[in-house]
Length: 329
Image 1: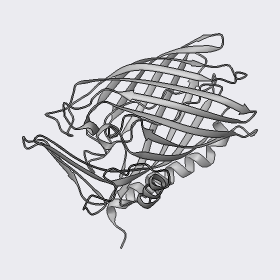
Image 2 (image 1 turned 60 degrees about the horizontal axis):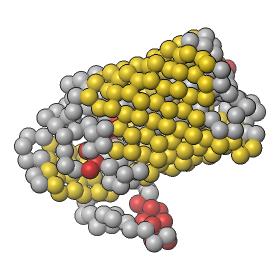
Image 3 (image 1 turned 180 degrees about the horizontal axis):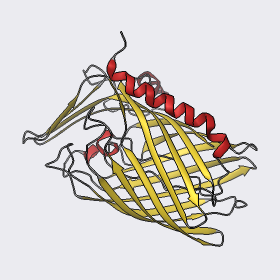
C-alpha cells in the first residue's frame, strides 16, 4: 500500500516535471550575474525565510530554474546545557519561476520537495578527506541511526527528527524594482516566506518571514567577469523552531563572481553569509558562511547546465558539504 504521507510529494514532483516540460516555450536567455539558487542548507536556517540569491532575467522574459542537491552533515556539539546531534543527509528538488516586467520589475516564486534519510555521501566524503589528508572531524565517530537531528538546551527548547522524511519546503516569493545603469543594474527587493507544511519545524518553522535587501549585478552579456552583490535583513515571524532562542532580525549578504573561460563555458564562485538565527553557543546555530564553486555550460538553444559543490566557509557553522546540479531554461 502506498504511504499516504508520500502522495503530496509525488504530486509536487509531477507538477515540477510538467512545468519543466513546458518551460522551453516560455523561457528566455538571461544576461545577468551567475547567481546560484542557493542559501544555507542547514535545516535550522533553511526552515526560515532566509532569501535565496537574487533573481535575474532579461527584460520581459520568463526564466525557470530547476535545482537538485544533496547535503550531508555529521556533527555533535555540547556547549554548557546545550546539546546538538546532527547525522543525516537532505536531498532537495527545487523549482523557481521568474518573470521580468519590462526592465524595471522582476518577481520570482520558488518551492521544493525535500527528503531526509541516511543518504549515500558518507563514505565518499570520508574517503575524499583521507585521500587528501584532511580531518574527518566527527565523521564515523557518532553512534546514531544515520538520520537523526536532536537538540536540547535543558530549558524548554528542544527538537528531534529521528525518522526519514519527505515534505514540501516553504514557499518564497521575491519582488524587486530594478534600475538599469549601463553595464549593470541595481535592485531594491523584498522576500516573503509562507509556510507550506507541518511535517517538521526543521523543514518549515511555520513562521511568516519578510526580508528587505539591496543588490547590484552586471548585465553586460559581453563581459568575461560577471558579478553580483547583495545585502539585507530578515524580520522573523513567530517560529516553532527553538522559539525561546530565535533572533527577531537576521542580516545577510551575498556575492557572486564568474569568469568566462570560452563562449558557452564559465566558472563561478558564490559566497553567502548570514547572522545568527538563534542565541546559542553552538556553532551550527550561530552566524554562517558558505562558499559555492561551480562550472556551467550555456547551450546555444538558450538553456544552462551548472554543477558544483558548496562548503561551509566557517567550519561547523553550516552544512558540511552540498553537491548540486541546476538547469536554467
